[in-house]
Image 1: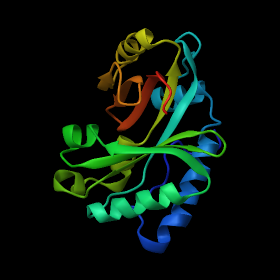
Image 2: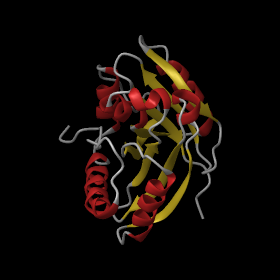
Image 3: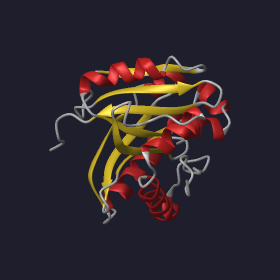
Image 4: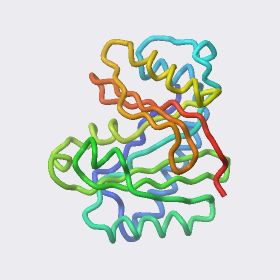
Length: 207
């Protein structure tokens, strides 16, 4: 593997003139990371080789990066404007994080987009609040960043999530049969490294 599967995010979500070069850097990272094989992602997460084909994984669905904490909603809104204005992305959508308030006690946002090379990317950022604000930056990156691997059918997502959660030190963080984007997905958490892996079947296409 030639690239890190965790984007080296700064502690804080960039503001002002720092936004554009930071966005360029994370988009470049996303396109390079999307070239990694599903088997290499499994090896990085589990620390042992697993056969992606036997698990009915068909490749990478998306890459997700934590961008750093924000201090106020205006910081996030400024970042979102920068993303939407970037000529190299399209299909930008956004919404509130479900995992951040439930698991970490703080609000957050996600942004979904597609790069010019066709890579589907998710960005995450959380407000610096409560016990989340006290967490080390490295742990925040691990907990909120991940690679999403494609599962061949929606009904198999639950099966593969449950099977992989049977490995020592791995537990189910979240499961949803269909989200607002039409995806069926499950998140796995490796408790000793705080790394997250998503298994997903893409449902209906976004408009």
